[in-house]
Every structure is written in C-alpha cells, then in structure tokens.
Length: 102
Image 1 (cartoon, rainbow, N blue to C red):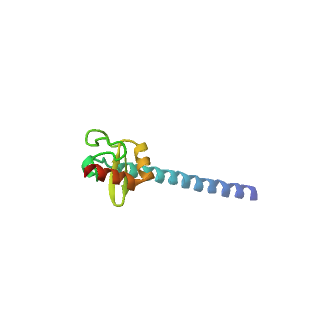
Image 2: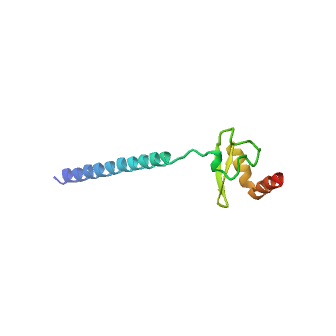
Image 3: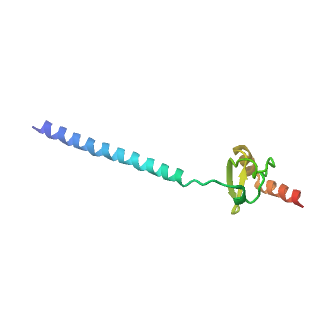
C-alpha cells in the first residue's frame, strides 16, 4: 500500500515539474520573440556620421550592418569588423574624421 502511495506522489511531482519546464520554455520563447519584434531598422539619418569611420564607406548608399553607441552618439558600420576596429580606439577614429573635415 505504501508503495502505491509513493509512486502516486512521484508521478504527481513529475507532472508538476514537467508542466513547469514547459511553461518556462514557453515564456523564454515569448521573450525572444518580443525582443526580435522590438528590433528597428537603422537608417543613415539616425547616425552621428553618414560614413563608416573605419573604411570610409558611404552608409547612405550601402547597408548598415552593425552599430554602436559611444559617448551617447550612434555610429554605423558596414561590417562587424569595422565596428570592432572602431571599438579598439574610438577616439582615434573620431579624430581622423574631424581632421578630414577641417
């Protein structure tokens, strides 16, 4: 008799934890979908400069592949590589741009 009682308890616990895991997975999927829905298309007009500070590509004519915010300014890049190069020394990239525009 005790055996049936223990088995019943174990089955009940498995059902509870099984439903809990399914619910967690469902909540995670909803959160990921919500994050994807929140993404926006960045246009060159939204950027601090209209060129990629690393390779000088005109971002009004080419797709913006990556962005970063540095000192409250949004910078766009043609690739993740250019973004990473910018992040290595952003002040140098900005100084280069300022020197070119003078």
